[in-house]
Image (cartoon, rainbow, N blue to C red; front, side, top):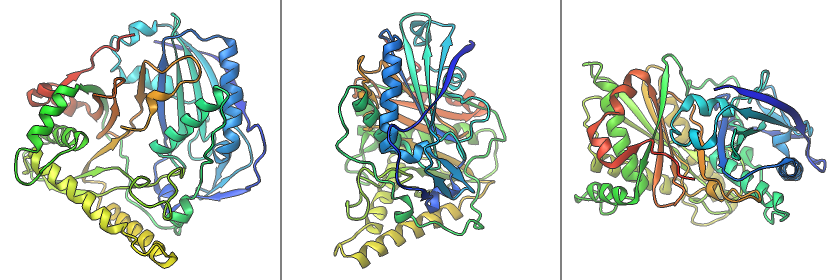
Length: 428
């Protein structure tokens, strides 16, 4: 499938900002130079009036999210110079209805989000929007933000604010860019181990867990004394990790240590005195679980370990007195624990990363022509899982990326297929 580029335009903020520079936080600095992306698919007809409304409302929203219209200089500072965001339009030689019959084609999804030549998430543009028109009345809006200043929760907040502006409503909550206040910048001479290593070709597949299968999986995960009650995300994560590691370690008889990380959004876990709930940036915690390839990754045991990491994080963020000294100490504890985890990851160690985008209201992205029929997150790591609510909010979609040789085994795992359906069609 080819995409025909129709237009390219820079959208500037409707009103100028008054902040000249914004420091990147400690963890903004070490994050890979990638975009965090989501693609919103709509089956309703779009016209030029709709596109113009998208552009004008984007301009209004950039006045609130002004760093996204800036440039990153020297890898440590965002120059909030109102340079603008990139807005492109393209045409796909395919029907949306045909595409959604097999929406697991990761190569096609990559074409939808790929940025134009010379785009760099480490410099500019920090925000890229691409509108794709299909041969029928369907179209998609792909939104990509630099991972240097936004995580998935920040992307969700931005899109929510943009949809309000598109429908003529003013957002009552101003976003707060306080990353450097929470995770103070570090000496840029500090070297972190690379989080992304693309030495082998990877493949991405989509698996969907229906509500009934989720309940069965939760019951399985909670069947013993160690786990009184497993959540749906814990249960799904444990199953996926079990099947991923089986596929990865079946190719070698050597006992190897591997690591598991599960992204934890700090916003709902800490008090607003420590971190505003509308904070924009990379406010996550990455606990590290080390396992030997001899481990069978039993589901109940893995869930128990995942729950223990949550308890440990709760201890780190305790802030009983709410005074300034206690707040500083809590931030220092979190940053220190995060650094310790990252320093334990070596480039040679296989790392399985899980990120949940559930409960982030992506399916509420209504720009004025209805809610999306499907939302696709983008994954960037060779061994990564991104979890997303299904449209009915009852099920969960897992977008799994593995080396090609591992995926060949993983997608046929009989244990996985008991609970998950591989790439079912999207009905519109």
